[in-house]
Image (cartoon, rainbow, N blue to C red; front, side, top):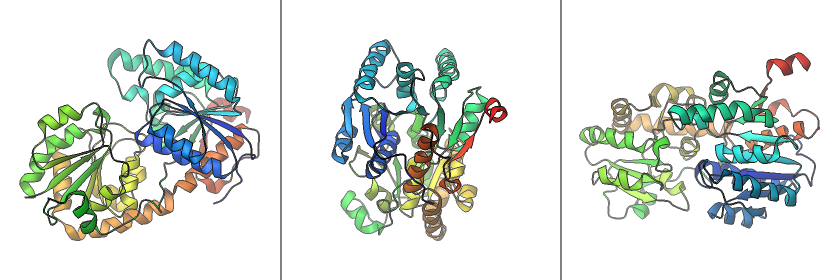
Length: 395
């Protein structure tokens, strides 16, 4: 599985906006692995907890003020990023998510090797003319990415169907199996929810409180779940723009845990973890939950099927934006402790074998070496490179 890293001293610049959620965890994990391998890692991102975490790892963090969404501030953001590029002089740029991918490719414009990792496509997050504009940009901007890195084959297929033409690598998301590991639920739950009935079933949803993650759909399903499973509780772990709206419609059986420094205890405390997303590339929360030995219910969006072992995929996937199907799946698993007990270990074994973060870091290193002119990366790195027709003809 091991493959050589890019040359020691290679200067990598990661661009990150957003600075929370799964994108932040991916950037942190990559920075940690690359620093350990001897690369010079710079990260440009807004001032945030992510910036502090990266500094503590030893990364060179440059403050890059940028809004989460495109808008009138974009020209200034591109200029500020151009200054960071001039100062950091990277050998390669790795831009994470739509906003950093937009500003980064405009600032670099193909002058140095550039990796763009969408972490779910921007045109899926919006509608109408905004979606059309986002798609037009992604088609145009692909010329300024030497490699498009997708976290699932489904995410890549979505881009291909949308007419985005580029050289693709599929590198599944990974998690740290030493950090995300099983623990007895009772003791953890007593610490997190000291006033609650320890025998009451607990469902946990970890994610930014926003339209993408679909907590509103989960709340619409929750009445049916609570009706079938008396005493069941739901914990929403995270914060975001929909916090107030979700809290206003939530019954007393729903706990709002807010943003937490460590999500691991919440996974360990759960009987079941749910992520009802409207779109993803490959969500980290289900992988983290599985690594903690907890079964999951997730919506059948990009990356979901690829992140689950077959026994869970047949039982734990539901259509997006379908409260009735979501309620049936959640209640069914809560009422079947034996099934939950069997699915948890299967999920952990799957994650250990296919979604270890070390495999992810090795596959990304292979992409870097390809772009920097080294030998092609090892076949065991689990990165599939899918060339365009033009590249196939000229290869």
